[in-house]
Image (cartoon, rainbow, N blue to C red; front, side):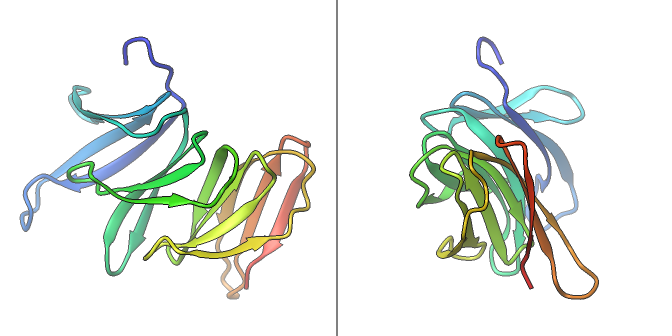
Length: 172
């Protein structure tokens, strides 16, 4: 990585030859401004892309029926970006947060994001369109999100904040 600081990592399996079963395990590393991908077996650097203008706080693998898999990244530059895993092409830039974005979670229909401004927002995983915001219950930055699936149809979203609280949101 040289002189850049790593902030987050994600393991992504991709097909190296379209239509054939040959997999590559890529380790995606989000740094101060770049996404760097390493081969998970040989540990060699495969690619790097200038991804954001500020530190990247999280990488999230999102699977959709129509688009297949995408890697979403969020950053202190107030943007969310969607990337095709096979060629690292940015397919969408999402704007809506007005401060740093720290956390993401998904149920594959929606991607939930959180930020410095205490906001928690839902986005369509298919289109990237804004769906809704949750009314904040935190008094400081929301740093971490976790979606917990339910067997009864009422998923919960857990949010953890710098105010030292955890809030559980019923989504169903």
